[in-house]
Image (cartoon, rainbow, N blue to C red; front, side):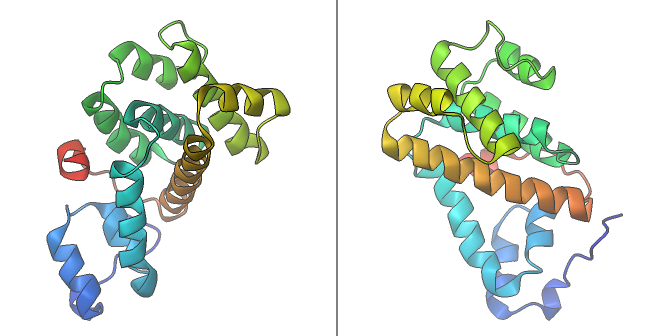
Length: 179
């Protein structure tokens, strides 16, 4: 049972109730609906991160899986994004390496390893080292670096909500979220 209540859709504002009826019935969405005035803009933000970035989807997803692995209590995030990662071409070997906490595994190319190092340092140290930032700038445009930071920040937030609220696991719905 979650440590925070899920809101009653009937007691939510009309806009939140309407949106909850239109999106997949995931517990993360239900939990975030507690933030009535921020919920719909948060959904739009999350949708933009999943569909409107220059950062390639496979790099986005390996970064999200890395955030999930580095965030105690974010298993929900891992389960949902493992399915999404597969749907955008992340290999089984890469997913397995991330699950084993091996971001330098040979299944990743150098660009992917740089994204994973960058993600790891941002999560654990709040900012990457000069060396890792320079590596990222050599492989990614400034836009992609900032988008990567946005993805990392979003999924750090979501992971912390998941860990704090201890939301119940849902079945993955990759197609509903990215299609």
